[in-house]
Amino acid sequence: MASLLPDESRFHLVEGGECLWLWDGETMDLEAFPSDCGEEELAAACEERLDLEPLAAPEYRTRSRVSNLKLVLSSRCPSNCAYCFRDGSDAAPAPLGVGPRALEAMALDHGRGSGLIVAAYNMASEPLADLPALRELHEARCGLEDRLGKRINIYLCTSGTVQTPEALALVKEVLRGNRLGVSIDGPREVHDRYRKDAAGKGTYDRVLSLVRWAEDNGVGLEAQAVLTRSFPEPRLVFESILDLGFHSVTMKPVRPGFEASFREEDLPVLEASYDGLYSSAARAFGRLDQPAIDAMKHDPFLKPFWKFALRTKAEGRCFWGSSHLVVDAKGDYYPCDSVVGRPGLRCGSIDGGIDWEAFHRDVSWRARKPCPDCWARSLCGGSCYVSGLALAGDPLFVDPFECGLSRYFAERCLGLAAGLMEKGTEPRGLGPVLLRY
Image 1 (cartoon, one colour):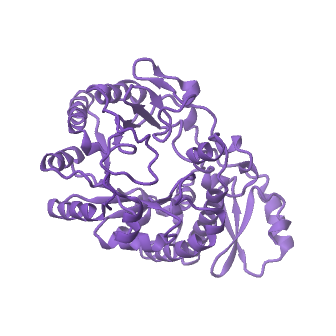
Image 2 (cartoon, one colour):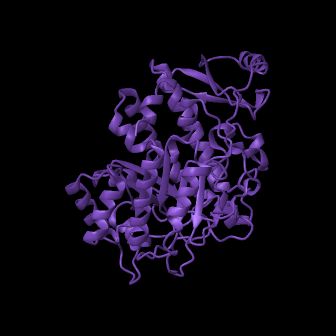
Image 3 (tube, helix red, strand yellow):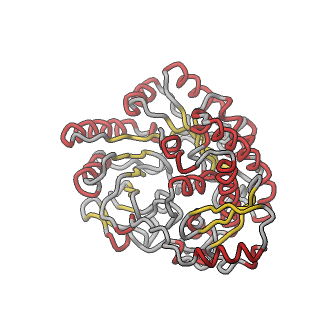
């Protein structure tokens, strides 16, 4: 039936519980039809919609400010995870002053129009392995807040391998009530397979120790999990982490190029496990169960639901070249923390400012060969740019595995939205529920 739609890059049919739903990727609408609706009626409905005004896409890639600074000031980390993308040199940290200078440049220049500024000290390094740099960043944040009358949050993600009393005391001071991100991949046998320390010992027990400390000190926890081919069970990973006391879970498949990376033939197994999560999401949204929604809402499997509910078109895969800016130990700027040091991807520096032409390089779905013909493009935005670099040396190359998984996510999220509408819940009224921190 779908083959009779006049524009398969715009329209797609989604089955609900009682209805057949027509997805219009240009207007971001779902229109209900009887389940026994004829092909001619659907084709005529599509023809009528061709004259509707498309929903405007966001113009964030043309703006001249950023709101999120990511700090990659060191490659130090006591962990030795098998799929880590840092260079492994364990290089000395940046000279003191780089972090505060980058934060000041963003607050006073690049991000001066942003209501809330976030500095994320994570990825490619362990923030608690360099306490002097973290403390000076915190002190610089406090000084800027006093000068600007503007809140600046610092987000931390830790491997849980550094738990000195000094480090944990600083964590509480820096977070100021916000949650702590922790790297954990699920049950002990799953986590310890790839997340080991320099001596080759799994780090699961140390993560559990950090969880106990967080519980005793009233610190909320957000899990950052990596899904691997050896355990393609996102539902089980999600449930096992929540059982430990985490408040939210975000799971991402390991990127290409590692022994644990997924292949296209793994999609059916992954999708079968994700099916269970979509069932849980339907129950949570149907009951407006805020804790359950909070626990899953930041995971990529619900990204298309966010896009539909908030009526926001995806122009790209992530914040590459838009609101996020990365600074390294040399004070150089990059569009992503996973590409620090890569030739040709530097986009300015603290001293020279942002090279806006390099920063705003077109990496939208329009510049990616298969995406313009895909009905899910406005919900997806394309696959990871770092995956494209790993597979073909080109950030615009689309990873076939991730492409298939993203289409599955889009299909299931539209089905989730359709199911809620059939039961009287309007997904576009869930904005406050989704945006609540």
